[in-house]
Structure formats: structure tokens, C-alpha cells
Amino acid sequence: MGQLSLEGRVKHVLVVSPLSIMGVWRDEFRKFAAFPYNLIVLEGSGAKKSDTIRHMIGAGLQVLVVNYESAWRLEKELSAWQPDMIVCDEGHKIKTHNTSASKALHRLGTRAKYRLLLTGTAITNKPTDIFSQYKFCDPNVYGNSFYRFRARYFDMVGYGNYTPVMKKYMEQEYMQRLHSIAFRATKAECLDLPEFTDVIQPVDLEPAAMRTYRQLVKDSYTELVDGTVTATNVLTRLLRLSQLTGGFLGTDDDPSPEQVSTAKLAALSDIVDSSMEADHKLVIIARFIPEILAISKLLEKKGIPHRVISGDVPADRRDAAVRDFQTNPGYKVFVGQIATVGMGITLTAASEMVFYSLDYSMSNYEQTRARIHRVGQKNACTYIHLIARGTVDEKVLEALRNKASLAKMLVDDYRAGMNPFSN
Image (cartoon, rainbow, N blue to C red; front, side, top):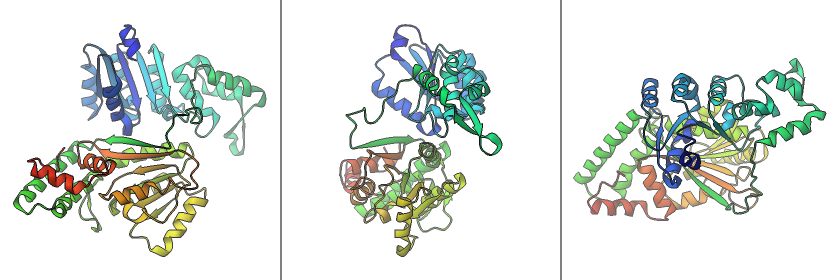
């Protein structure tokens, strides 16, 4: 991107990504872009996004980041903006050739000089998955017609002739074409891969939720000033802020807390979809019961069998839940409450863990991480942290990663004249 811009061949770049990782592009540009650029993540209402696109001008490389749902809804505006380069991040999102997002990107792609598709799972369910992705990148590889492509390479078998089976005599041609424009790197080839990887995935709370959060920060600080400043008092007030970043307001034992945000659920939904498409098992860790219930409801809506261990699950049922996840291929996701699953269980059927929320205990954090990173684990482990940007989530993770006392850190902030709850 940068080199093409410096050579004067690219002025407008459109990045299309899942909603949950749009902000990652902004962060990565800040870290690594050694060239002039202006990057905007499209947010807000459709009218606001349209207006942003129309006024996207300036010196240096102009970069627009948009999610797949908005890309097809804003196709007219994006086409008028005339992107020279389009990047589809997690490009398997357009593997189905006849969805609105796929068709829009096929059309937009024909007018862009450069097209790049990034994915670790180009083929998620069946080998026909690659057609739509390659139609975006280069329709010369497999053509423009899905049905001609399917007829050339596959026999349709099974009930209703819905199952594609590769024609033996076409396998070599299929693979040659597949690799003709692709660059592939496997984990085995990446010899410098660490034993485990930590991923920080920023999440932006909705404007209304952020306004509620800021008011709560103000109220918490006022209460602190009027009372006695102790570690216990600071952490008690921090509790409600942490609950809000997870989407809820109310006490942990409240049977019907108010849901004020779905930002983390939306981010988690994308992660779950990617894991299921890759046929990987996944462990999700959360702190509060309302979060556990919301995550379970999300999985039920997706039709994903899963097991749950929280403080509400009787001890005599926990072993069965772990056993099902470890040994039964049908159970793809394990949801655990961080204070409950930190010790005594093994979850090595998964090598990926999502921290939906965190508590303040270093012991809980380290012990929970060890549920997948222990004897019996054969794969490199990945830990994804969903962190609400500009909130106490960032302070909590910073303390845990630095093995510092969060309570002491916040009390010290207060004594230094700062609001310990704000960033």
C-alpha cells in the first residue's frame, strides 16, 4: 500500500473487514505506516457514513475502513469514491457468491486496479468456497459464472444433488489455478511463532453506552472524594464500570440487569463465526453472570452446541461439562466464568481462548490461561482480549500483564491528583 502510494499509483484504498476488527486497521497503521496517510473508520448512521465518503479528500494516501454489511449498502458511494485498491480482510466472508456483500465487492473489484484478499480459511466448508473470493481477486482464474465453474470442476451428488464432489481428472487444474495468484504460509513454516500469542482486540462502545460510562466515571470519582480512599472502595466503584464495558448495568446477582451495550457481543460473534468456519474449538471466558447468559444465548441463536461452567452450575455437573467439551466433537465452544474455571480443569481440546471480560485477580488470570496451555496441548495457543477502548478495561489488562496490583495502582493515581477511573 505505502509503496504504491509513494510511486503515485494508488490514492484511495478501501479496506473491508468484519465489524469487530475495523479498529485494528487504525491501530496497525499508527504503528507501522511510514508514509503520509489519512485513515477513517466508517462509523455511525448510513447518512453519516455517506457524508464521510463524499468528503474523504486530502494529501497522502486516503484509506477508508468499512465492514462487510455497510460495504454493499454503500456501494454507490464507494464506487463514486473510486478506490484504486480494495483489501478484503477475513475475505472468506464473501465465500458465498450470491450474497449482497459478495456481489457488491465483485462489482467494486472490477473497477479497482489492485485487489487483495486476506484469510487463513479460504476453504471453510467445501472447495466451491474459493470461487467468489477469486472472482473478486481475479475473475480470469475461475471465470465469472459460479455455475460454469461448478460444472467444470464438480459433480453434484447426494440428496437433491446439493453436494459438490471434485472430479478426479480436474483436481490438478483446480489446484494449479488456486495457487496461481495465492501466497500461502503455514504455521509449520513460520518457525519464529511463539508458544502462545496475545491479541488485543479493541472494541468501541456505542455512543449512548459511552455517555453512560463517562457519567459513571464522574459519579464514581465524586463518591470517592466524599468518602474514605481505600483499595476496597476503589475496586468497588471500579466494579460497575467493568460491568458496563461488558454490556450490563446492575449487580452481578441481579436477575434482570439493564443491557446498555452489545459491542462486545458483536465482536465475539465474528470470532465465533471464524472458529466454526475453521472447525476449531473455542473457549470463552467472562467475569459476570449476565455476560455468561448473553454469550450462551448468542451461541444458541447460532445453533452451536456448547458447555458452560459458572458459579450457577453445581459442582457435580462440572466434570461432565468439561468431559463433553474435551471428548465430544459436537461441543465446539466452552463458556467459563473466570472465578470458577481457573483451577482444576483441562480444556486442551481448544487452543484459542477469548477473554470477554477480566476480573482483577492475577491468579485467576494466569490460572485460567493455563486451562488450554498445559500438558496435552499440541498447538500454539492464542489469547484474544476484548478490550473496550478508552475504559477501565485497558487499565485492568495493563495491571495484569505487568503483574501489578490494580488496587495499588488506582489508589496511587488518586493520591497523585488523577481520576483513577479515567484513561
